[in-house]
Image 1: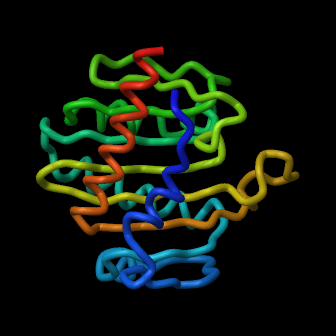
Image 2 (image 1 turned 45 degrees about the horizontal axis):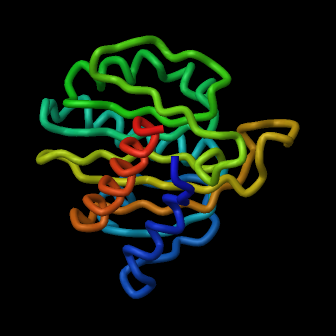
Length: 186
């Protein structure tokens, strides 16, 4: 698999002029998520979990067999708590690609493909959910600033990027597709 940081790519694609910086936040309101096209933030795990949940719920409510979802969990074991939700998303999606370091084996589903990433990869430090379909185009990409060597994993800090700009999401999905292709070729 080629080495790439989706977070760095997201920043390049969006450009600084179009990105609002919300600074460090502890929570995010749904209106901020919905009304702000593209923004940056620094937050702990619970805030990113909530943003991810908003995207996942939107996927479940906007059934579309033509859509693709790319989700990065750093370590596959971080998916365990939401595995049932991702199986349901896979039920209604063309394909769901799950990325992570192979420390747990996710359940199998015909529409879900697991992409194992190396421990030293940039993606092993990134959390992302990219939904690319005709009914929902949104991306959340965050980089873990603390790593897994902290006493409380939910206290980890992330620098994150969210966009609902269709052009930004399409380009991030294309990069993720390239990662899938390169992992299958290996």
